Image (cartoon, rainbow, N blue to C red; front, top):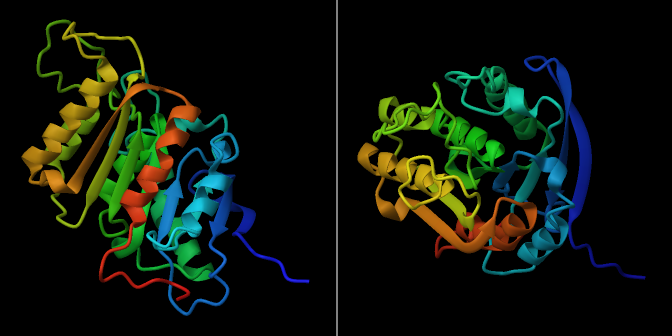
Length: 277
């Protein structure tokens, strides 16, 4: 009897010294993983506990069977009641003290978990072929870690990112609104020409419009960040912005756009080497 292997799936946990807890994760690899002599690109994802709710098993299976996509390894990192403490910006917590452990989460990713993956699995060089993605607050975390550790990643992808994250409460008629932490993080950070960014936001992500501009905050926060990236020197071809008409701040919306994100992240080019081929 012959079986067709659609993918390889593993579940594990990593004992983090920085976080003082075990972090559960799921790793999914294409069927060519066992026989390949080449290393695989990697997709890290925050909020990996949403793997089944987003239908990622089928989405990844379809991606692995698509010859226009370079086979890659998916690694979903699960979170728990620590989410509001560990996700955020490593430079500082927000004005309510949320994200106070983001620096520890960043160190867990960069100093513990990535070295573990490099040691145990056939993964490509991080800077050349690693993507970190996340949704909402997990997206803010992924962007923060990629932007501040460009030697370990080449792409960041954010779905409905929590770019409202701020160091003080919003003040009415504050047109520049520099209290949003990511804006000054980009302004004062280092330009890394190899980095690329993918942003998705939905027109129904929320209803709030704090400055009464006629544009919901979720869209304005994202487009303001894009403007800041452009001022930093990132050309528009390095930035993909997807505004989904009717898109909401929920798993079905993010799942529906996930295949397009995969195509952006791992779509083949003329010079791509394909693991397992």
